Image (cartoon, rainbow, N blue to C red; front, side, top):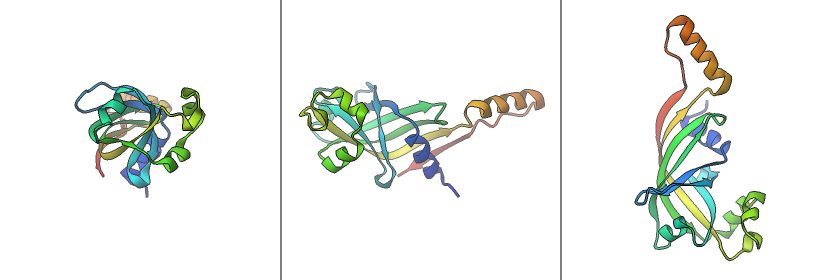
Amino acid sequence: MSTEKDTFWKRLDDINAGMLGTADKLKFVPMSHYADPDAAALWFITAEGTDLVAQTSAGPVEAMHVVGDASGKLWARIEGVLELSTDREKLDEIWNAVASSWFEKGERDPDVRLLKFRVQSAEVWTTTGGLGFLYEVAKANLTGAKPDMGDHFTLNF
């Protein structure tokens, strides 16, 4: 049987990006994440000179990553700690063509920076998505019952 954590990680892996920002600045920027359920972490590839790199250069900071994707059937506010990482093995593991398109010299470009987001908690909404949503609305209109729009739960890591 699948747990809520399993559902969260599986659906998060099906989503390409969200909005990432630090708690003190509340300036969110679109970022592609790479889910790492075993470490309860998300990884981000970014560049020297970005606000997120500047905000984490002195050490870990509280941060938030917000995702919303109807096709991924997941909406979540994820809270944790964001920090710069020098983990070359992880960078090798997650490097891809999308990341490569941002850096002229590829993975070893001197401006490449890796951020690790250690997930501490998440408020999660899972939905039926697409046709399931339409079915629930139609059923509610016919029967007068409230539609089943999915689950809402909080996770702590």
